[in-house]
Length: 272
Image (cartoon, rainbow, N blue to C red; front, side, top):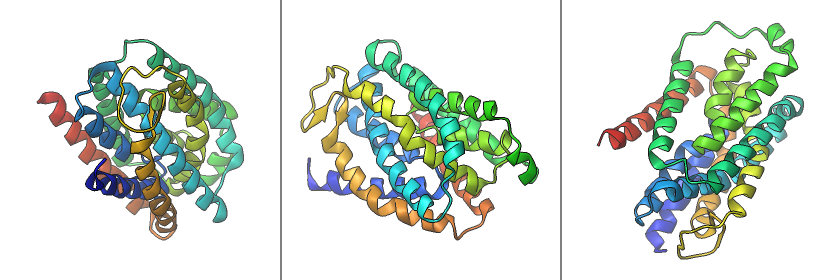
């Protein structure tokens, strides 16, 4: 890789890590388009393109989630009990879906993009929709099965989109569990790095039929992921610090703005 690409990946990693710490989405909304561009520019299409995007997005998300979660833990915002209730079903269903995608040729680029746009649009609608103020008493009395349901939805969404699950988890935590934005983000970023472990296992153990330059393990292209991870180490702690200094409605606005940009980008590609 040339120096310009390496530097660009570091900068995108910084941006993805920052957003991971800021709004709790894992950084996939940055990493997915980046890997889409990189692998598409090398002539890769179809099911193999989707596998490479998903696998390497999850690898970057793992580090973004670990660093952001650690920062939340240091600030006393690590909700271990709720994270466990969500992450176990998310790992089970997400790992199963990832194995199906990695092993069989049925989930192509067209389906991937349409699902990606649909999820972003749904999340944007839930983010800007007027909501009543969260009720702390109600939030404390949410049945455990509802958190498990959130986990099942999150694991499925993450496996098929490469987004880390935050785009589904945060709106669900806010509407179903009545969590404020900052708390929902902290829970989301705690779930994400644990949840993606079986996803990564599925892609690492799969036979990659595309031979690219650099070090790789299955579909995990370490040569491209490592510069991103360097940027993540810088951006994620900074994102968490900023998240604890600004108002909830500012976090919601940043989240909604980023989703809008990505929706427009992918709609242009699909239509074109």
